[in-house]
Image 1: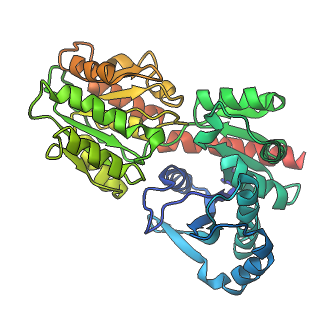
Image 2 (image 1 turned 90 degrees about the horizontal axis):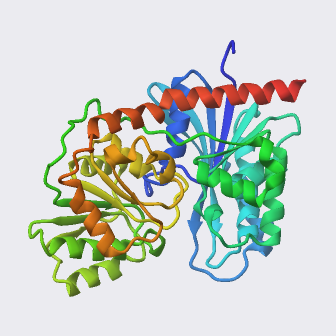
Image 3 (image 1 turned 30 degrees about the vertical axis):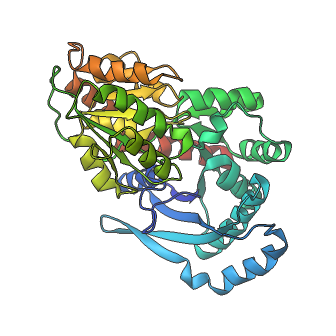
Length: 407
């Protein structure tokens, strides 16, 4: 490749001042591509939740005209070193109870406005097939190569996709020259739901940005300070983490648990901690910026992550790279990270539905586990998910798409 192509990234998730943790994995890819020499511009269709019920569909035309009238407000830049990456951050309304099809339609309208604000598209890379992938498939010229990366955890669910959503998703798959899943579990689920796309589905993982330079390797260290990172919502099972900690704390009087994240289950967790007499030992920080979160992960004795569904689980990779052992439920994505090579060195990959007693026992086992080798595990994970490695995989795919488009 003589010169990396110009890439237009289209995504519903990208960090912003109000939500610095949302879409950090997309931004990591953008930064890695820029550092690899690619010219990148970004369309972020940013959802703004509305308190109103009812359908927004009748107002779509008026809203699109308003977006265009305010177009100067949506264009900014994301700095990568001394490179200013053009960033069109176009708002998308999100009324309560909106269905997925109407949600996708609103993202397509915002994507169109973003395309009008930026340079012509040479190669498009859309994140999340149901939203940005379909929007790109509908809006791009037929000779523009489209690559789709899927992250959305709902795509791992056993629930059936509705017929309209499945039809929409099939359009995105048919239009893209390659669709990437961020884990083998997600790829396998997509293959099951869309077998016709089997020859264009592959895995490219998320990036682990800024891993520590060195990690001490020592088993037998006391395990006292637990950390759980992620949205405090039912799907992440924070109550199970708390109940597991309560079992552990019965024999470890100085143990602590920190929840990092925001979500509707925070009051439930706080109330239950009080009932268990653990209020002084359980900390609920709310959402924190990525740098503070990474520092807390590195300071903890163990990360406990019991989510039901994860397409990748970047927090698991971050903890291992920081030298923090992990106890993780098999929620799909972590299976690739905690494979047969890494799991014995870094902690435990439990079954998909562990009990509180099983989690507590797994944490206790780490103290005396001679197989634990945090330094080696950190090195393996940091190399696997290094920014340069992932960026080169993507650049080769973009070139493949360009070649195919011009044959």
